Image 1 (spheres, rainbow, N blue to C red):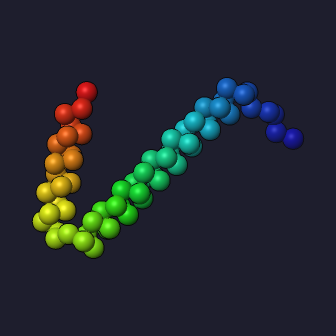
Image 2 (image 1 turned 45 degrees about the vertical axis):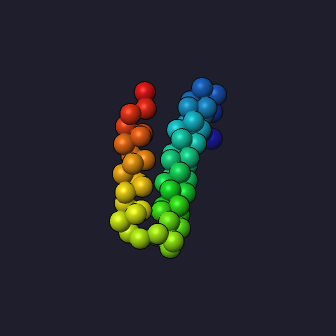
Amino acid sequence: MQPKRPVKDIEQMAAVQTAAFLRRASITYLECCVSLMMTHLQREEVASILEQEADMLRRLD
């Protein structure tokens, strides 16, 4: 029988795994959004929009 882990350790592991899941889900969502944009806009339009969004993100504090 394995010794039980402290609740603090389990909560920390859960937080790490939750953050990893949310990161993967966010990236997948972003990829879907870009794919949708590509079905309705020209490649250069999509690139321009994404560059503008990236610039806006960089300016956030």
